[in-house]
Length: 117
Image 1 (cartoon, rainbow, N blue to C red):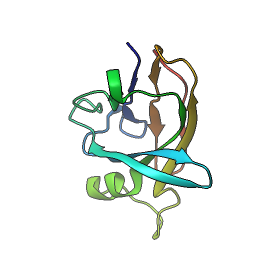
Image 2 (image 1 turned 135 degrees about the vertical axis):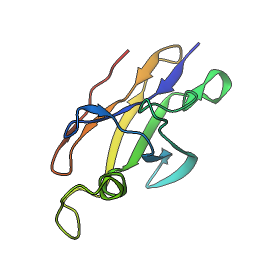
Image 3 (image 1 turned 90 degrees about the vertical axis):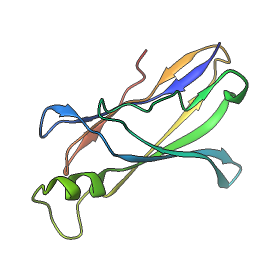
Image 4 (image 1 turned 60 degrees about the vertical axis):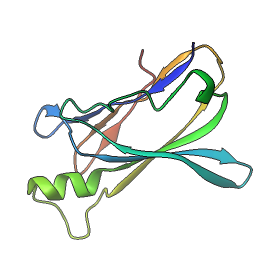
């Protein structure tokens, strides 16, 4: 059964990033459609997969992480407005039974991602 999951790591403080707002969009032609909105828990993960079973479909997607608000809430010293505020990650799901894990490793000045398992 295919599924999509994510987690967020705060690389400045070396810990999971709890309370990061995340929105998942399906890319449709030139537009996009909101699939769900959620937030990370204390472990930096969502409480449930973003898509699983019948909701999991092949196609192009975008995860949008509200990382600026997270670091601001921690009192992290940042530029105003922050250098990184909203972090979008576009990716494609090609395997209908695959596990796609799209993590975000972030600081107020940089981020990285990869396809995890």
